Image 1 (cartoon, rainbow, N blue to C red):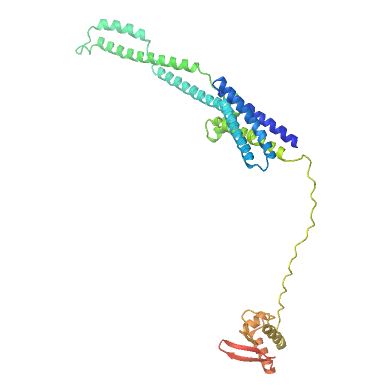
Image 2: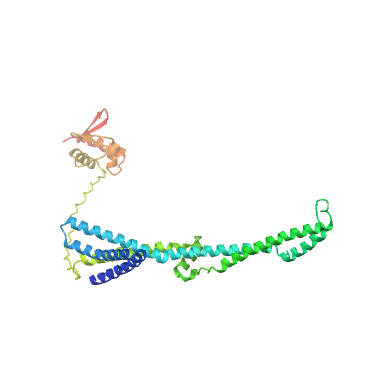
Length: 352
């Protein structure tokens, strides 16, 4: 697995090196610039592999590790511009050129159609030379067509011929413009969008969603994908291969015996007395006085219990107040309790 990572990383890095070399050598204006850029490409290629490997051998030296990572980041940025520039130069510019050529072709075709329509408006006008010949003969025959003689038939004929001559000259000028537009259109080649399948597909999809010239977005997408693969995946694979340790599978870690945590036992629910008899009620009152039971609505003061008979009946599983009063009277008569009338109600004193 480690060897596979190294091979994949080297392959992708080689692709990045080729893309950056292609772009930067084409970008250079002089031979000296080309040599410098090629040298930088080689240095970035080496740095992307030496930096992750070097970090492993300079542990404990923070400055050295920082310098290695700075060089690694600089190499990635340098190659990123190279890969993005390559796709823009080879694909993005071509897509822009096709778009520009398509617009120029459509504009020339529209101009030719418009010029043809202008000429068709004068389709019924005779040739210019024929009109001029007839106008010259009629002018000689009509003589001086001044204001006083303008109503004569000969002068009217001359005026009509002059108007027809003006239309013919206008037609001739429009024919010249049509000839120029036709020549310009004929010199253009219709852009073949289907030459690039990706652009054709994107243009078709863009037509469905109402986005014109969707093919121009291909170059940024390819640039991003290329950057991800050659600038992130390749160094990551190499870093994993270098720092992953031995290619042998790790020894199995013995499983520790699992001990369930001790769980405290749930507290027992207090037994609820029925108080079906006076003896049961006496036992209930003794538990309350001794603190063995806690009953909402009842307060204990020494051997005395203060509270309503309704609270006692509710604690005794819903025994009626009448039954509680009857049991209390029986216990009082037997001398087991004493009923003391107080300010906040009757208090029950449990006698020893």
